[in-house]
Length: 120
Image 1 (cartoon, rainbow, N blue to C red):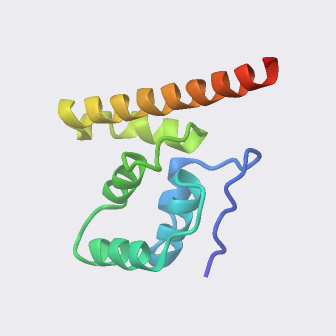
Image 2 (cartoon, rainbow, N blue to C red):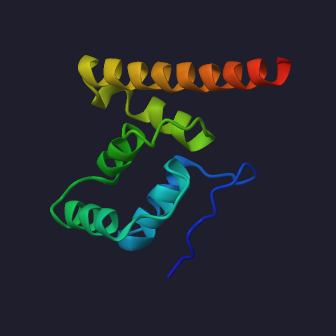
């Protein structure tokens, strides 16, 4: 069994290397790469069930990437975005963009609040 790849700023992970994993190794590495955490038991079971029912690995990665937690910018995420460009509908694309814009807004808002607290 291959060990899960540790998601860190120094990790060099490609889409191809991620796709080499199978079953639970694939799910663990996909979560670490895209969500920066290990899968919870229900997520692991759900994704394994989807794989056994014929869902593609790219389909699983797409679900994780477009989940509320999947908005992280990483090399694997950007490579995946390019790979799935033809797989997503305009509605899914708008939902992903709006979620990222909302996340960026809240990050800036929190930073501004922290700055204003320091000034007073």
